[in-house]
Image (cartoon, rainbow, N blue to C red):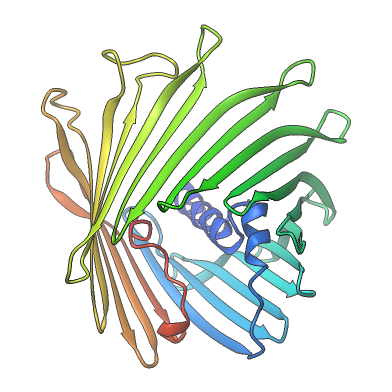
Length: 387
């Protein structure tokens, strides 16, 4: 992304990071996920809302993100503009993302995401365009094709990536998705460069098992396993457990587990939810530490809900760098408050970090106001939002 209007490189990098985060939210995580979403038919009513988020990060410029959502018939346009506070005290544009979604018919959805940046002269330039078409069939099979093009600096767009995802329901409880990513080779032709194969199984005891295999071509063009991610989740009334294991090739030609995440979520009679996720790693890929995995961090999240909104508090623990045998210590605290009103919603997220002296200080504050009716909003999972 082009440099913003500010000379401070920290400000520019933080703006880029925020814009990349926005892209991951405004466009679905993967083609298959986007394709599945298009099965839900849009309602016939028109709707619109706006929201403004101000983010203050320690030692960087304050950022302001303005979001708008306009729906008319079968077309929806979402726009997000990122501005950074300049030395004169005025907000100056730094990046913009526009997403246009058209529900062509009951089985086809087309989405276009355009990314803009501003140069040092204050001119808006088209930087990237991502186009996706997702089609579903009566049997539940889905195909999504996503093409990403970037500007060459002269106003011309060049294709830099294409993803083709095919999802098949082999049975009512089993779904397979194969996604192939194509990248330009030395001649500029798109060639297969990455492939993921995902198998998802659901069982009657509310268990979901997912195996995702990442493959890369070798020098002969044959697909070789680069990583395998296996996850299992199970719900038991209001309680939920999960586990995720990642394995990669080791020096002996086999696969060795390099990380593991274990999660547990409980909910009491008052509706308070508590989630704990522990993540374990080896010291290096394929090499066990002290004969196995070591606990690298632990994240605990507690969410309380009432008629006016909800409050989520999260603590992240990691090993004490000054005492390797002292166990884990809290190094990050996050508090996320949501308040509902008839006119919309207000959110405040505060992150505190431990300094070298052991004291906590505010690292960032994010405040968001929206005129979208709370009942119509799609909130992120409580365990994900504060991060």
